[in-house]
Length: 340
Ligand code: NAD
Ligand code: TYD
Image 1: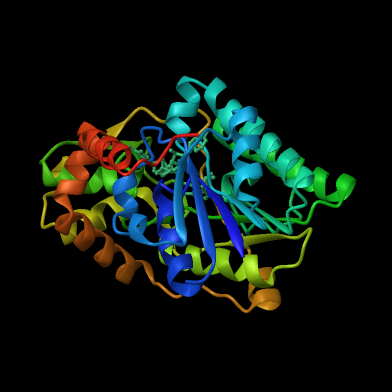
Image 2: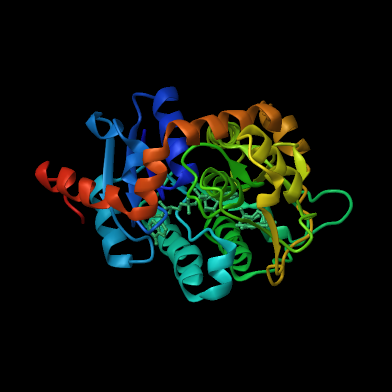
């Protein structure tokens, strides 16, 4: 099996490639990543030596490059993690979100049809359903995104399902809740809180801090994505969640406790525009159809996450200063690996 994985140098993509490579060591993995500020080759350190793993620098919204990549590597399946993923950045500059998250997906879908891909898995998000104060969203719930990021992801989901219905492209979608764990770029709530606390800097909490997210440990998501990839029905959508609904202020205070830091670091700041109050998913479909359920309680996952960041302060520093970029540029050019 030849699997083309996009966005594999990001947070979830890199965790997934490690997971997938351990689980299916004889499958070939082609990791296509543009290496934006969020993409980090250091996340996959060690893997570049394996014969079944190939990294190719490429932008999914560049049709010509992607065509060359599909023709050269002839993948059997595509798993699309590549995206601009930060809500605050999407509010500042929405255009890039549409380019990568929608146009990029349309290019992948066209090439997947042309190359008769056997499976196309789109990695989507709970944010496309919008906010829900009571109960939870099922896969059939209407999509009411609130910000440019979630709107671009919702549009992509629509296109994926349209390609399945119109052209019978063998596609499926996972929609997960907020992930946390190792290798998350420190702009998202949990790693940002850890890094600011380590430096005794203020921790910005938007609005009253009572917004609710359902936290999913990234390894659990990797297991769920692989389960859907292997056993999910074509044309179906699967919600994935950790069943750990918590307010932001609870999450921040828990991290401060683990780091033995004072709660006075918490600083309430102006709310994010269009800030969704609560996300909640029903995961009965993936439980019933695929036999998957989340394994990691938040108390365990956050302990592991804080420990990982404490052990990997160099990673944290390098990904903020961009130091790894020059290292890997040399590393890859020495080994003759090309950017297509
Ligand atoms: P991330 O921002 O950490 O990583 C995104 C990766 O995509 C980076 O390696 C980046 O270099 C790459 N990329 C960006 N634009 C690209 C382009 N045009 N071409 C090729 N590569 C490009 O994101 P993440 O948190 O790992 O999220 C991965 C996927 O999961 C995204 O599709 C996101 O919408 C979805 N998702 C994330 C969460 C979460 O909590 N992080 C929750 C649900 C769904
Ligand atoms: P984030 O990690 O950006 O993920 P998302 O917006 O995709 O859910 O934010 C998680 C929650 O934390 C969200 O309700 C916004 C809030 N938040 C803060 O309060 N302060 C921050 O500095 C950040 C980045 C997020």
